Length: 129
Length: 129
DNA sequence: TGACAACTACGAAGACCTTCGTTTATTGTA
DNA sequence: TACAATAAACGAAGGTCTTCGTAGTTGTCA
Image 1 (cartoon, rainbow over the protein chains, first blue to last red):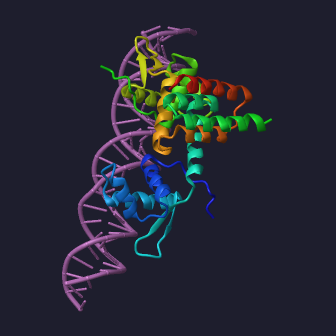
Image 2 (spheres, helix red, strand yellow):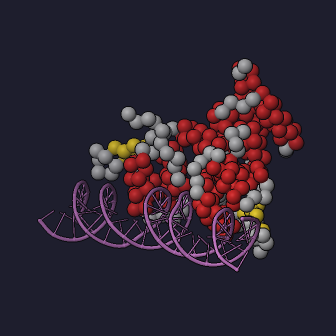
Image 3 (cartoon, each protein chain N blue to C red):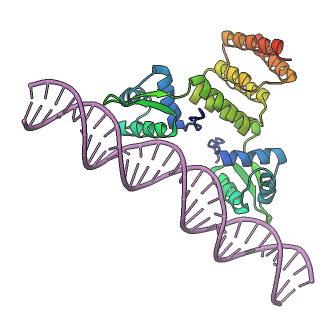
């Protein structure tokens, strides 16, 4: 009955998920059209990937119409958190600090973004015991 | 002339790099002994992986002795930054803020870690125009 | 010196990832 | 109704990842 845990998406799968998160429910054609703006990918490639993603439980599918309609099974934030946690474990020995430091140094964030992070920081320092 | 950019390490390769970063120069046996504490892995599996990593340029090797001595080619921080940047691009649309937010929410950081992050934040907000 | 232990090298198997051509089914339309 | 367009399904190829068995080499020591 769908345990709720999907496997880590591969690179190509993540690209498709990004489209699904951006556009909501999509047909294969929708996704292909969007992806074609960047990469050069055949239609059946996208189709096959999405079928596999369905088998894996990464997406759900409504096949009541001829053109099946796909949705991401997990919310974007859920998957993002999973990926961050995964990287945290595999590459940072579980140190959130190190990861955040690298992230902040890797790409300069805007003033607004920094302010937002500061806000969360205050929250965490204030509330947590 | 050795561009300095190594490919993204796979999961197993990253596990080996973690050992090399922790212990410094290592023989295959050193790495195998350490990894065996956690996973169950044959010696030749580790050997093969490290040979491949050498071919890829992920590690350097001193083969002047019978037991070759391996070192990580990139510093831990360099690889960490590469991986964070990669994830940032693939899963967060380049938004450092979102990634940091997810990281901070995913695993509670200690008071000291939070203070350290705050220090970096001050630096970034103060210095950059 | 001869046997054994430890090491590297090699190759191959099996799983997964990505790609796409081909086939089959459905739908809209002239 | 027949035809063209469009869709899903299928299968297979070529690549990578991870695993390990086996063979060959080198050092050690009784």
